[in-house]
Image 1: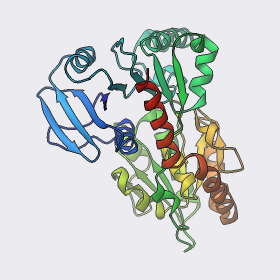
Image 2: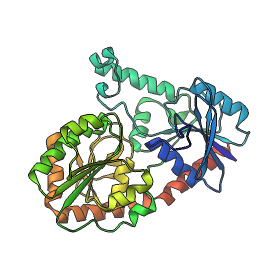
Image 3: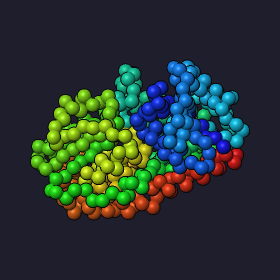
Image 4: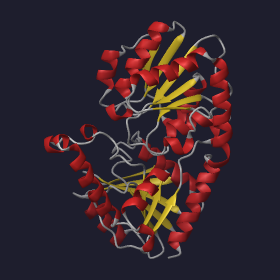
Length: 370
């Protein structure tokens, strides 16, 4: 059996892999299904290419649209028993294939309109535009017979606006996971310093400018605090204007496979997104590693973090609340350790790779049996 995933991007023409959450998800899913199927990712490309990666084959096909790519895959690649996978339910394509699954990575339309639309009318009529966006996402939903979502916020939204389960459609919730390397990490350095890690794409809706503003205050108030900002993206220049690189404020870019080594050196993980979150991989990895996690109470983050028990939740966009939460952790090793231990304990049973892979194998088996 083949599983063929439609992706916006995965491989570059030179054979290297793009860095991003969906790309990492596809790599991990291919590993989870190894031994059960052949796994391919197909993307539109200016010129045809085929590159072999661990557990999957990436194919670039010269077409002008996502729909043309889907048509090609259905006609020339998939057999009757194979499964078509949409790496994101936002793909502008339709398939009538029953053996197909779309992945929903988290609601994005909970953001302020200014963060996800450049349309002047949308920004002027924010509430009305959000209502329109709900309707548009319902239309996209109708393209898909089967959906896997990463958090219960999407499921709740879906139940509130449609009778999805009364139709011949299926929905599974499979939260994201942390790999075993994070569960095996020792305690961070105990030399009196406190290191804070922000590991996200440098996009403004991820709370980048909010965090660097807070980090600048923390560095000024606490000489032993250090921060690391790992990632890349269009907001990098603005971030560095607020918090210039220095010995105590390090900017870097690492592949996902290097994240356990980076996490090892840090005490606190911060996920200050303004919205558009599923079950954040950065937050789950912080929990699994036994680090104290501070996150915004948006999207699927409250599904995995109970405020004051296994992490701290703050209101999105509230600079003072984020500052006070981080300051409380900087000042108290006991609080950091207590939250970190609870985070690892609650993460272990349900948010590890084995549980995640088992859920996905069950979904693919059910879809393939239709």
